[in-house]
Length: 114
Image (cartoon, rainbow, N blue to C red; front, side, top):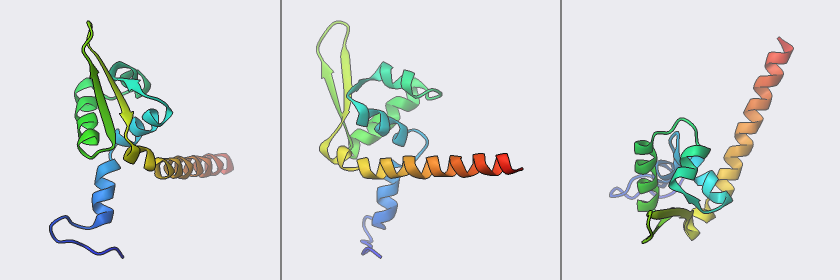
């Protein structure tokens, strides 16, 4: 088990907090594909409100996972992309996809056997 630093907590817990939740993994997965604008992310991730998307992107930015670039154009243009650190999390996201696909497959098989 990794060492626990009392001032920061358990590294596993800290790592999970950085990427967990309903929206963060979905946002990160979309940004793995390419740089996206805010509106694109809203369209690609149904069900998330503008407010929640803004908060989640800010949290990902604070954790060094996402980079926000604002262009001084009219109308304003803002793009989001994964940082180098964010890209280093790709194997974790890909593994989450595989776990999810496996679980879906098991459920479908159980349903078909019933």
